[in-house]
Image (tube, rainbow, N blue to C red; front, top):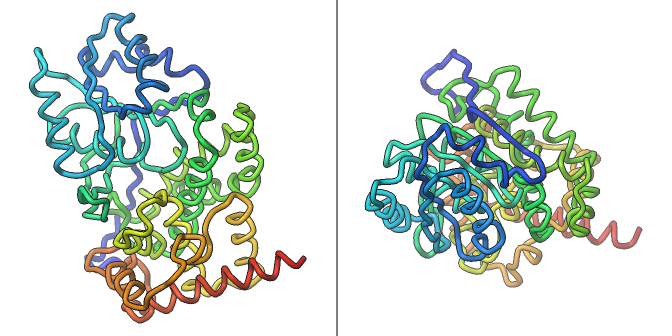
Length: 376
């Protein structure tokens, strides 16, 4: 039920500063030094080789004393506790947190910073998710199943995006970010009378941001993906990185989420889908949301065209569910309709049967679209 507490205030929230551009990592100390001098740099082994050594060198050259915390891959309470202990046991203790990497590294770092009451700077190395700017983390079990959303009182102090690093990531990461970002306006326009993650109603600026995010994706999404494949920094690539990271981040948090992300959360319960990225699962949820919103066929085709053009999944088979079991779909539907899930922001009739039907209908629509366009 939308807005059960009859909230009337509007709320918009954002990180204190957002920086994006090539070679931003080499200039990181200029932006990060006001936060402290002894950061814990949370980074996995792969990203450490790609960007971590450059960052630590730049910070050390500027007179800072960074400590590396090696992230092991899952944004779980266990991993958060382990890395927090590293920050506390450093001599002297770390005085702020740096997240260097993808969405789970970022969500882990934001939770550590909140638990230790420290500032946090987010340095994403891909444009695969809208996690960097938000005041929340998506936490998982050590096995990779969705556990819960964790909400914070404030957004990251700084988000710094080095596009010369981001463009070197596989194009699949950018496509997943497009999937995540494409849900932003689709969901937000359906929940304008529901409280957002700031516990207020959406402002006019959040509505405009969501709309602009979608506009950029349709204009430049496929072009940006081709630039990424060529590792070419183009205006289209920069625009889509900003849409995936900043506009989608501000948009989902101050606009609100609905069925697409609830379906995603349900899909994480299937081990066969753990190989998928966040935005890939969200994308299938977006098809469900479009159907739930009774989107006209011509408009639905427009979304499907963009999704397919950047390689996002629109059928069970493309997700990796070659043999779909009814009990699995029921499980996904049940979890998508869990108490407190974002699907309840919608002012429509929702229950497990409706969600189950949306899953089957989305697959059918995706298969029909692929069959029809392959013959064209």
